[in-house]
Image 1 (cartoon, rainbow, N blue to C red):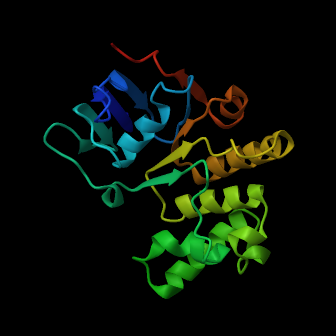
Image 2: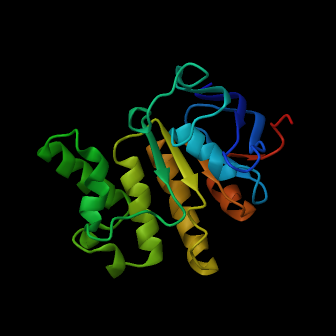
Image 3: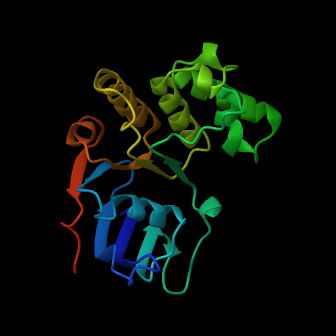
Length: 217
């Protein structure tokens, strides 16, 4: 199993400590695209934040590619987990061009390698001619593609998607989710995709789990 989540407990402080996740378990195979559905408040986005290392569980274990990332005795910082994440608002830097946004996570590479990787990602998302534009100069669908390219550029072991299509209108969403599925298939990256829209998950993912199905209260 590539991603293993075992007996995970988490509660945010200051609210009487109700469990957002209680005994949650999930397994994902290498290269698998798994959708996570469920109503608001079930902990879908919190699950992604825990996997990425942005939050620490009170109990349980998270293992990625055989390495323990979170447990009672261990917490690997987000930058060391090789996890890419795409947020609902895309999170693009408004003062950076499309190319510089994609290059943001490639600071460990030399200039030549970084340029080659950015060019490859621009070609992959079919936006080579938009490399010098700024986020406000491109459409919402194009911004979503840039955000996905930025997350994939460093070759993450795991890609986390948190409602990345929710800000798009219905017609554009249909087009973009087909593109997203193609990009995921090409990159072969293991993916966890959170969405309240089952149509998005049906198109992009190979398997869908519902928050609560793998949970013990």
